[in-house]
Length: 339
Image 1 (spheres, rainbow, N blue to C red):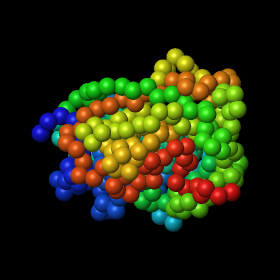
Image 2 (cartoon, rainbow, N blue to C red):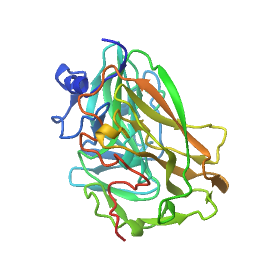
Image 3 (cartoon, helix red, strand yellow):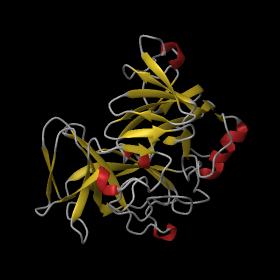
């Protein structure tokens, strides 16, 4: 087999081969064109602080009274509160061969509700990475930033990509911010603080205007307030060919006044006309940082880093269950379009 990101038909075989082990059989829609959704286990630990276990140490060894404040059960659902840090064992674990590594990212729906999520491995010295040959459990660090969430066993906040061979980007594309908006003039949304609970089991059931304030920019400028969370869109349409996948990355870390992405995986077929995605934009999850910062229409805000697929997927993004194909400016699937 050639190097590259594993496509859906190879991802399915990971369960049978034991490379990917799980507490339950694969769920419908869990396998995507170039990634697999990861499912929450039966509990979560409320932590004093985030951590990495470090070389030679297991995550379970760190879950002692000096770090864990209490345990919450997810089997019947539990509220994970804003401003808190939780660690949840995932239903999936890995037995990677020496030629296969994995990277993780929040799902799009997770990033768009401002839930900061990272995956940790035993002996991990970096988040969202499982090196080739890793054998052990996976844990999701979960920190709701704006909305408290109601989470249950089996909910999917993160996703994982598998790669044979080294990470070898083939090209990069810079995307800029759209501050012209559509016919209604709306260029983005700012999250309303103290607005209620987001139930992860209720798709399209949360009234948009209770959680979000629509924004307009008549002069094609928008000031980001420190600590506030925004949903914006790229000016450019984005298309990911079937022989490649992409990940969103910062445009320049030295800018420093905003973070412009939370969830970064783009699967093959996103934005491709043949898969129903003509005109798809990249939705940008943006958080202001230390000082007010003015964005202008067309300002570069993020980059798409492309990498080759080992083979095209059998089903492209948009041909499987997908909420964001052909999207423009779009909130997370949990919100209705009604007030």
